[in-house]
Image (cartoon, rainbow, N blue to C red; front, top):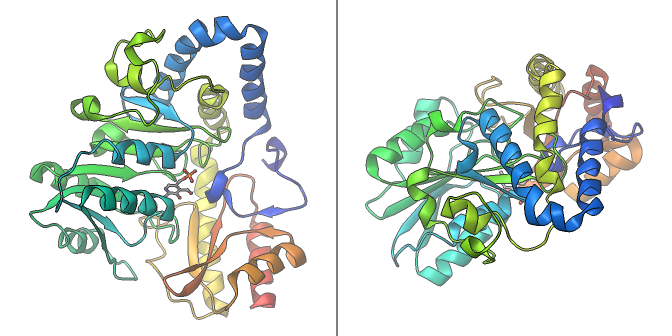
Amino acid sequence: MKDKFLLSPNVTFLNHGSFGACPKTVFEKYQHWQKELERQPVQFMAEDVYTHLKTARDSLGEFVGCEGDDLFFVPNPTTAGNTVINSLGLKPGDEILTTDHEYGALIRAWEAYCTMSGTRLIQHDIPLPVTTHDKFTEHFWDGVTDRTKVIFISQVTSPTALIFPVHEICQRARERDILTIVDGAHVPGQIPLNISEMDPDVYIAACHKWLCAPKGSSFLYVRKSFQTKINPLVVSWGSDGADPSGSPFLLENQWQGTRDMSAFLTVPAAIEFQQKNNWDELTVRCRHLVRETRECLDEYFTLNHLCPNTEEWLGQMASVELPIREPEKFKSALMKEHSIEVPVFLWKDKMFLRYSFNVYNSQQDAEWLVYALRKLV
Ligand SMILES: Cc1ncc(COP(=O)(O)O)c(C=O)c1O
């Protein structure tokens, strides 16, 4: 499969998690949209783009289990997160409950909001290793108080690469009238997703990571009953513009001034690419390889595990704690000496390496990582 991607053949690429990787044919479709725009810019931007956006939203909606008109495209999950956070209108003293495994940029966005609004962000500590979904949910729920108005939680965490049982949490939150915002940046294309079944109030995700769409394609889903509360981050023409979508939610948020929407329009091509290439079957091998590699690393290092080595907690990536001191130096040595691209970072005073496997990786790539780690550690 590596030939189908634009990735350099000289690099063992084990970091799909950061920015994804785009297949050649999907990238060609992206360029096709850019050329279409430049052929007749006025016709495209003033009229055609809305029809194409509708097709793209519907295709994505079908893939993630929601109506296409309940989501709009944004360039990245940070934009989606900031849009929601700045629409909340919470009162001083209200609490936002989250975990200590969340993505740093969004934590900063929450902190900025809390300072401005007099609300409190509670980063509930998740004891490691996690064990069962029930224990996780019970422990997380201990953080809920009478002041909790919002729950913000990742479905797949960034530093620790864990799959959190967010379905149960969304259900409980609905019973208590607590708003749920799920960060699914790593979900579409990595683990099955049905937003309607999960029933969060808000779901944010990237299409350029595991769905392999071009960079700058992400989305914000909002449950119908909450859509009128969402204020656009960039106020533009809204209902005075050319968007024929009809719903105020789309009118206010979809058009944000002139910009290149080609990455959004390419999302159906990315979905089609995965379906045509039997993604579900191919990625079973990747998930096995993730767990086998952890077992293999266990033979050489005494690992402090973050979770049981099961499909319940791990998808196509895993984070392992390493006995090293300088993450930047270690990461460059992996690249310089072994041509391996993989993130190595400090998290909670410990050093972690987060490896990912996708369809373009082979068993040899996994063995090469283990060999390199043995040599360098
Ligand atoms: C869990 C999670 N949420 C949000 C983001 C934000 O993505 P971006 O920086 O592209 O907005 C990331 C990025 O990797 C992430 O891992």
